Length: 146
Image: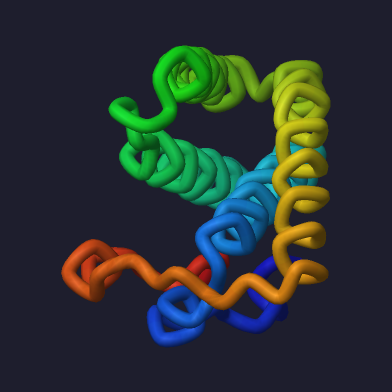
């Protein structure tokens, strides 16, 4: 269960490279989707809703972190993809739809893996962390389901 996973603190987030933070958020989304699927199979409506809402919050976080000035077309396309994924999350809640869960995991996993590869390269190059200003992080809650 996700509840037994260690929580990521705001301080830990501040010390991560931005690329690593993105990987962590993708991991949280995928874990929440898996939690939702388990909840659907166990007919646990409250748990499913909580997992889906958490995945939605994490997708919104990714969307809010996009830099449209520097990211250009890529940021625009990611924004549309995140909006699509957030819309699909509602289907999971309305219809207890495990197929949509699988669809979203299959959509997000390659993106997560690409960010992971980028993060590994940055780490290998010895790039230091590039923390976000603390004011942007203070509104975040721990990155795990509780």
